[in-house]
Length: 127
Image (cartoon, rainbow, N blue to C red; front, side, top):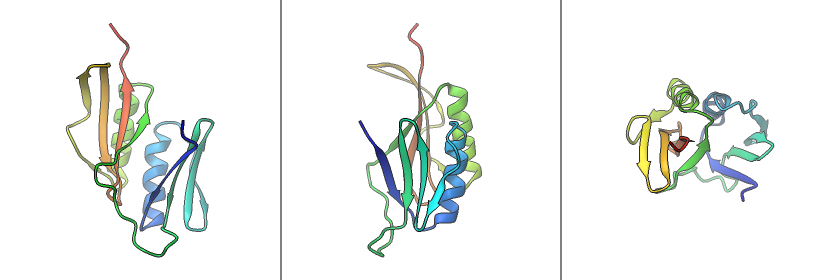
């Protein structure tokens, strides 16, 4: 459905260190810098951060969350730990299982160094 997701940053170097760590925990290769942007490419899409080209500060979308698919609860925990260790902050409830109408899911939430809200999600197998 998506070809890419791009979010704003005010500081490229801390953003690169943060996303190299959290996306690396998901098996994504290190990001590549292209002037004022960084791209992390996978066979299924591209995630990127960019300094706004209009010269204005990057801002956080209130109510926005970007979710990353995980292969296990352990991978979601590794993602979360990497984010906290690289300038992110935990938000929402602690990482753990949530029950919902579509089954059980394991969620871990972070805010990146710019304040963007992120989520790691693992869909637990149905019993």
